Length: 453
Image (tube, rainbow, N blue to C red; front, side, top):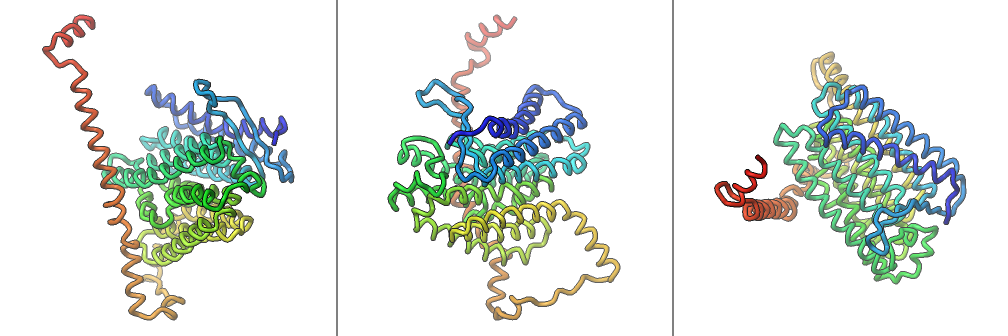
C-alpha cells in the first residue's frame, strides 16, 4: 500500500495548512502577541484554501483505485524502539471526509470573521478553530492509533474550550466543564481500544482494521472483535452525543453560533460516525457489537426526535434535530449500509451548517411574520397527535421536557466524581508546592532573595 508522490504532497499540504495556522496563532498567543484581525483573516483564509484545494487534488490523484494507500513521513520520537510514526491511510472515504471537513471549516471561518468582528477573544477563537480542523484531518486520515488519538484529543479539547468561550459568564464555564467530563469517558474508551489494538494486532497500524474488506481483521475471533469494538462504540457514543451521553449537546450551545455550526451541526458530532464507518470491517466480525451500535443509534434517533419538538430555543432544537439524524446514520452503519451512511452524513452536515448559520435570520423573519399577523402562527397537529393517545403524549412530553432525565444521572455518576477528583488533585498540588517552596523567613528563602539581588 504505497502512495504516489503527487498524492503524498497533496495530503501533506492539506494537513499542513490548518496545522501551520494553529502553530502560528498558538505561538503568538502564548507569547502574549496580538495579531490584527486582518492578519488573522488573511492567514485563516489562505490556510483553508490551501488545505481544501490540496486535499481535493489528492482525491483526484487517488482516482478510482480501490486499494488503500499508506503515506509515511518518518517518526516523531525515537526514544522508544517503535517510535511514533507519522502515517496517513488514504482512500476515497478518508479523502472525501477530509475535503468535507476543510470546506465546511472554510465557510465557517469566512462567516466568523464578520460574526466575531471586534470580539475580545477573536484570536483565541481562530486558534481553537485551527486546532479543531487539524484534529479533524488527523481523525480522517490517521494511519495509526497514535495519530488518531492525537486528532481525537484535539477535537475534544477545542470543542470544550469553545463551549466556554465567553468565560466571563459562569454558565459557559460550567457547561464546558460538563462537556469535558463526558469527553473524558470517550477518551478513556478510545485509549482502551488503542491498548487492545496493540495487544491483538501486535502493532498500532490501522490498516489492520480499516483495510479493504477487512482482510487483516478477518483473523479475529468473534469474542476478540467484540472486545475491541465495544470500547470503540463507547468512544463514538461520547463524542457524537449518543445515548446515554446526549445531555451534553444542549449545554454545548453556549459557544458562539459559528462554532456550534461547525462542531455540533456539521463535523464534530459526525466524527464518531465517520470512525464507526471506517471500522466497518471490524464490526462485520463482531455481530454483538453491531447489534449494540444499532440499538444505541435507533434509541438515540427516537429520543432526539421527540425531544427536539419541545425545545424553546432554536439552537437546542437544531442540536436535537441533528442528533436524530446522527442516530439514524449509526443505525445505517450497523446494518452495513456504508455508502448510504456516508451520503447521509455528507448531506446532513451541509444542511445543518446552513441551518445553524442562518438561525438568527430565521428568528428575525419569524418575529416579523408574528408582528405582521399580530399573533403567533397556529401549529396544526401532526402524526404524533393523531396516532399517540393523550396520556402517552403527556408522558412523552414530560420526558422530552426533562431531556430524558439524563442530566441528573450523568451529574451524579460522571461530573460530580470528576469534579471531586479535580478538586482533590488541586489541593494535593497546593500542598506539594507548599512543602517544596521555601517560606518567607526561611534560610532557603533568604538565600534565594540574596541571589536575586
